[in-house]
Image (cartoon, rainbow, N blue to C red; front, top):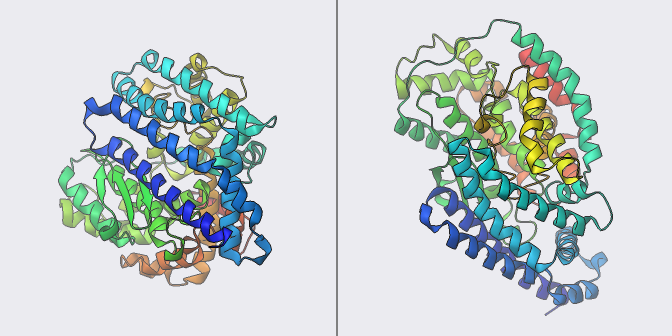
Length: 486
């Protein structure tokens, strides 16, 4: 057996164990009994200990040293690039630290959930403080004298720095604020005022997931407090949530997570359980969920078709026609919650989180400072005050489970989606008529071939450039938003 074959056989087992760890996380958020939290934390720590040992196994270094990358094809070279990067980063993190982070992440999610339900920031602060300390330790180990925040960001969006993100956000903010103020100054449609049976919402959600290409034979749709997608290849699961008076929460959470899941399900079979067998970055991943949800799912053409599906499911729900329904789906309104924000204001929510978490990792803020800093920044950005912690510092699960450096990838995904949508409209000149008929295979098929099948074969920005024919920038997204809302 060649060194490359031995390395890939070893890596396949590591990837499979990583999928098992992901399934533990899915179960914790959907079906795990509340009393199992302490044991689940131990289970997470045990699995992470095994995974860390495999990722730092000295044999990986030996195999890599024996492989001549110049003799490999593009797939082989990409596999080696990912494995070498993971090996180098994993070696910098002590095993005890990796295990402690895994255990605390599981514990802190439960603490956060209870604190959020009770509007009790103080109850969450000890766990948050401990998480910040551990993440700073990890960041310092990974940075090796470099920028601590960049070291964490690199886990989610390789080859991108905090300064890169800050520059993109600085270019976006003035036009987004101007557009927001312009649209908010115009008359907005009234929100929905009916109750919508939650079982009917879930039936509609399952139909929409299939419409957007989700393969239910390799996945499932369940309910969770915070919608997410989990897994890859032959087992990709999604969750959504329902609210009695807000069916759009369920509908668009489902379409969003279907974008994530379709990416994982559509990666070429040859990449299954290899480093290329999952989305190449969270920014690219988010480009798929956001283009499914927004450019396709909230388009005038598709909402015309969706209006008919809503009437079939719920009867008369107080919206007169397709035109009014389109405006209702896309209404701008004051709100606190990132996941419920309209397209115009969504990125402003991300910018707030990016600046705060960057300051924390660079030592400018502590856990005890975050609530006040969040509330002050929110009031400055949105013009009204946070009314309760669950609408502010406690609304997102990310910091509790150790996902520091994750937030900016949401906005980068919007930027990438803007570029992809321009190319999609050129490739599918009849896109609007397809969407108006509830026919998504043309759009999702193009995204599959342009982006999804490749998995981790290309670097993130290279992949978007290949797919869209342009260097990624914020211009197409801003033009799309101004054209739609302006």
